[in-house]
Image (tube, rainbow, N blue to C red; front, side, top):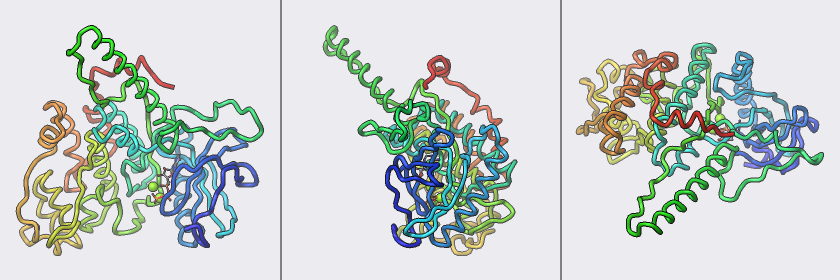
Length: 413
Ligand code: ATP
Ligand code: MG
Ligand code: MG
């Protein structure tokens, strides 16, 4: 992809915008761009530089993303709405063409990294609550104040806020420092590196404690508990990747969203609006709490990925109301006139709370309360789904477990 019309090749130390930004290291990449950590010599801060591919369709996509990001930034002067901000944008000419570049505030690793980091075991519910509040704050802002639908909400597109601000590093020479990454750390920003350090410290302490106890009472060493709750680590996060976002009155593509987070009205092509983001939000919250995707459809003998997806939804959430099942552009392909799937006949019925208890070993109360929060957001009828603003009022979010006091008295950063 590093050819005419494609990515711009960057080397550490390259400068952009007449010397204002200096490339430090690559943060990530996607279908449209490469993203670099860069030093802003004008503000002495670090930023994320998103350098778009140069072919006309990518330029057009970047113009759209800049329009959306500008609205997000202009209407949030205090930077408190949990959506990434645009610092600046400019054109950069290179051997592969002219690239539109977006200067974004520098954020940390994605919460997908966090899920992986926790070895897919799920985060404790207090952390899930904190992250849910951030995501809902961001969605409420996008939906209610700006009338923007994100259309691609998922763990990969929620980035942690860096708890260490690299711009506080002393700058000893004229050349800005290249951030050093501890060995074995995750790519991306600082937040997970801090978590990693804490976990290592804690693991060392646990081993020392067990060794001490062994010395006293051989044979009675306590079990080493796997790390589940990242206690004492405060973090918040932001919604990113507005490349697929659209104004609610100007929907873009018909097929939106990443498969596993796709709402039923998108699968059935019944038209869509803000509630599609709410569906993806519920899938994301479930994944944070369990470490596993809520729906991971696959095509099978005699049925498509779409049909498996619809079957999985109905196994977990009950039968789809007939009105919804037969109301979409693709309904006739998948459902008979009674509203039953044509090609997948026997469904194994469960429920969110049963799944949380049986498969993920949640205590019954936790499972019931979390399911009570999620179930309304997973209504097959998009008009019945609560809005982000309504979800923010849900008692589950303000509930606190026994860990919270300790967390507050032990902040990080
Ligand atoms: P996609 O194919 O997902 O649409 P894209 O080309 O639009 O990709 P992004 O998803 O915006 O690119 O960014 C690619 C990656 O760069 C992200 O997954 C993330 O790892 C990193 N990244 C993006 N924005 C930031 C930021 N503000 N701070 C830190 N890292 C970032
Ligand atoms: Mg992305
Ligand atoms: Mg994108």
